[in-house]
Image (tube, rainbow, N blue to C red):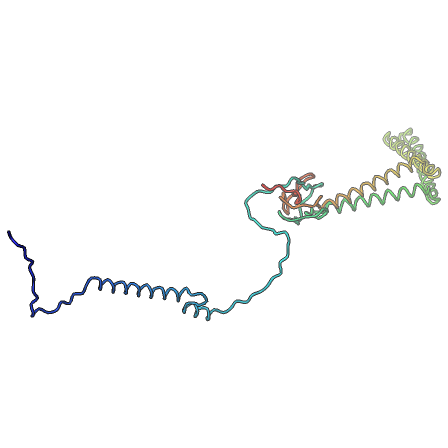
Length: 295
């Protein structure tokens, strides 16, 4: 039976002591280093994030920043308006075309598209030279008609009757002379001293002189009798017609100033200075600014 004997190793006296350390001693140093690193990081973070203490750089920047002035404003309640710019189209529900009421040459245009005008404002001017001439002529005809009416209403003056009597006497004298000449010419023609042509001319002179005498007699009788009522009424009608002509000429002259018929905004201008327009031609188009459709 074999007997097992443990083998015992003996250390040599010459061998050097071993420098290796136990494993548990090395692990202790690792943990110590880890704790020191964590403590250093934690201290740094605490210094940075510490309340009431600014980092060095932030503190320097705060010292260099100049404080801004503060102003106070009293606020009041009200309706706020917000302006918004959008693309769209604007149209008016009401518009009016301004037209010329007479013929004429456009002398001046006083408005442009987009201008605001009020009722009665002049927007265009036509040449008024012809209108002024027509008004002067109408006034002259009125003055003549009024003079004739005044003469008829007053009656025939005595000097007029005397003048017409003198005209009648002269006409009768010429008639007597023409008749005497006719008698002499008739005798000479009968004697063969003059031709038949001389007799014809003498008779024609008698007829003319007789006509003048009759006309002068009628004129004298008219002067003596005075104007009749029908003549006066007819002349009054002439005066009324002349007054109407003056009024019409004044209106035409006023219409050379083309005016706006209502308040509004000029949308379009149809003529320019120098254009010739006829009655009812369009001058401009106005739109009402208080009734607009936006879409």
